[in-house]
Image (tube, rainbow, N blue to C red; front, side, top):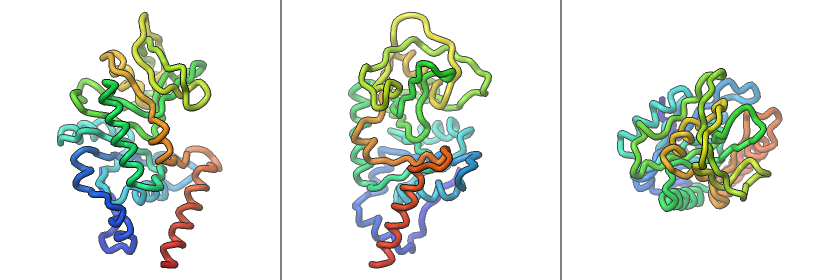
Amino acid sequence: MRKISLSESHKLVDRWHSLGVDNEAVAKHLAFIVLESEGNEFVEAQELLSMTAASLYPLFYNVTKRHNLDWLIQRVAERGAKSIVILSAGMWIPKLSSFLYELIRNVAVMRNENSFLAGPIMNFTNSSTGPHLHHQMVIIDLFNIDYKTLGHFQVPSADTIINFPNYIASDESFHGDYAPYWIQIGIGAGQMIRPGFGSLAMCQSLSSQRKILNLDAGLRAAIFYSYPEKKDSAELTSVREEIKNLLNEFENI
């Protein structure tokens, strides 16, 4: 676990400060965790981390590997965080102030819906892996919950099978029929599945009668994941080009 930030003497610092983002004010409500890229054969982990670091600056955040995620979430929760945001290295946030606005609005919706868990829901009906959350971004709202008993993101070994509660998914979906706006507890017996990222936390959420929300359209529009795990990712190429153009603009100031 380590913190990474640009030097206070960096020539771009003033541009970020001019956005009006108050780090101390944000830190009272939101804690950010960045997941390192591991075992990616297509792109260097440091490039992805730098991409996301530049997006978040000047906000505080912690960086961790996936196997330490549960431990870090619990430590951050114990320090009094109200909401925790998990981002995977390779996430690009074009405009931080817009992202924070949409993020806070999403947290408000979560509290209104009695939800402590939100993220890109992956609900493939014909897959060996059961319902899970895409690792690019997850929100955990700690309002009125104890993370020690609700919320675990450790992905079990590949041969693990868990009992996932019966659930109902919204008819509306962001992509095809696999990204519902929400899922909630259903009636009847659950099903045995192979868990993916966030499946255990989803089980606990449903069992405690808490709805799981997808990220809404406004927040989705404020983020851009580069999908570095894909070979020849068009998204990654697009982000690299955008960063190159931004740096050229700064050099011409």
